[in-house]
Image: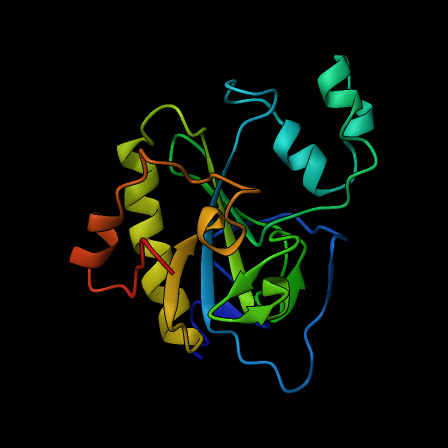
Length: 187
């Protein structure tokens, strides 16, 4: 692992905010998958601190709508969050299993949290992601692939079909493939 950019699973160029929403990876685990998600809180709104509050179990502090109040019992987090401006925040060490995938399966293997790295893009299924987000993602993913034996990059929709639809049909998988990343659009 490149010690210049990685320290104990933390990618040092990212802003670090610790989330408690992770478990230790199994000792025999091989981190072989990166999963792309999208999130906006409240739905279709960007730029609030609600995602950070959710991932750090502080959503109750800003839950001023019924929707946000419905999230107060959740204990979830991805490893990374890329906002609309391209700023990257890391919430969980990649050496740990962030609670991002839920009930999921990849190539017949259940429980993707144990062997994947989750990346949330601020957005929704119904509009394109920003150029700044793609540039940030195309900077981050090669670093992850160099540090971990990533075999595939897929969407939440691919590991939890019928339950999840993110990152959605606006996500440009071709950009990842053109960058030489192991992107898959169908798993």
